[in-house]
Amino acid sequence: MSLELTLNKINDDISQGNLGKARDRLHSLISTFPNELSLRDKLADVYLKLQNPAMAGRYAYLNENKTAELQNAIVVFEKECGSKALNKFLAIKFKGNLKLLNDSFASKIIIDLQDEIKRENRLRINLVDKDRDKYEYQSTTFDLFLPYIFIAIVLSALFFMIIGIRSALKTLISFILDSF
Image 1: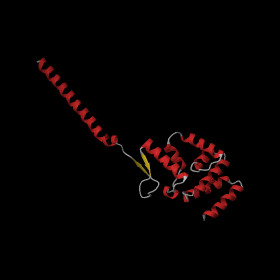
Image 2: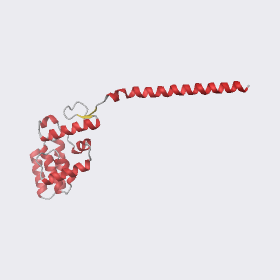
Image 3: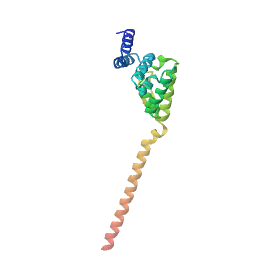
């Protein structure tokens, strides 16, 4: 079924009050056409009609031109996600290709979220190259030295155990020899 035909059915569903069916069709279209941001806007409007502002804010988050009602919905969505950028990024569920968005408002929002995630979690999110992993952990200098620190702690513990056992044996032997 073509995009236009499905959008016509969605408009019919909305006009007939079948908001649940319209919502489901829009979710399906968004998964098929993830870079078509107008579908997210339409879904946000449906969620507003369904009295679900958090979900409306989730799908309106990448929209530059927001009504006052959608701005309030975005505030509800952000409260629901908390202060972590990773929570917001995962909640908006953008599965498209960032290169196809060019320099749009949505791409700037996504890049800002990615930068925040990188700072907060040392996690790189790949939305461009589908041949690479989507999430890449970026190691730090501390991460590189962590195995060596662990080995040093284990060796130190063994060293002190050997000294303790040697000292205990020495004391035991001297006690046995002194008792005879």
